[in-house]
Image (cartoon, rainbow over all chains, first blue to last red; front, side, top):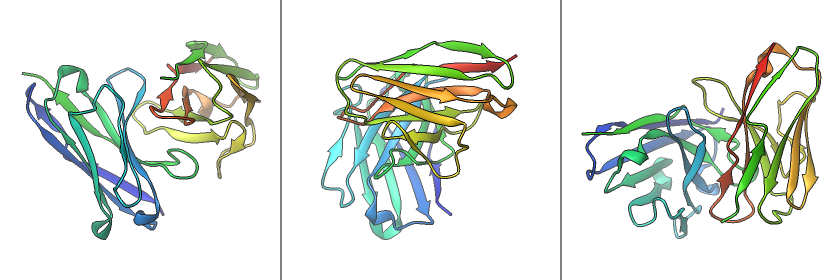
Length: 117
Length: 107
């Protein structure tokens, strides 16, 4: 059974940093592109970042480019999102999702990030 | 960036009815369109990918169609468990973009 379990969310002040993690199991992690998708409270979905199987290629929307960094450790079947210079508009539930093939066929349960002073 | 305009924003229907939700892309997305269902407090679940391919385990009352810039999700014979918010996603080119969502309420 495919499982994605996010962790690392919490309350953080504007301008500070936070690192999210996603532990994957139930599939060969190194074979899949992985992504982060977020959802602000009571709002829609926004794709945040994607990383290739080896980690050599990464993709971001302009809203987070230069502030967020996606990475992975295939040996640990883990995905990460380093978030720097956080803003109030980054407040959201962050989901880890498996990307290759059918897009976002599997999602984690999400971890809430609240950016507030 | 490709903009996805989803309509309607909300929808109320009765059990057993058939409903359709539309997504209009700002440019041709070559059938690279997926549909998701999200229930309150839960993660989104993939229903349809590549415009019309049904994800494993999804009931056959869900179907997708469309091409070019216009796509739709149809739900036949509505059941109570279909009350949810539905989103479309274009995965044709980065940045991948979602529609604004359609909240489906059952009367």
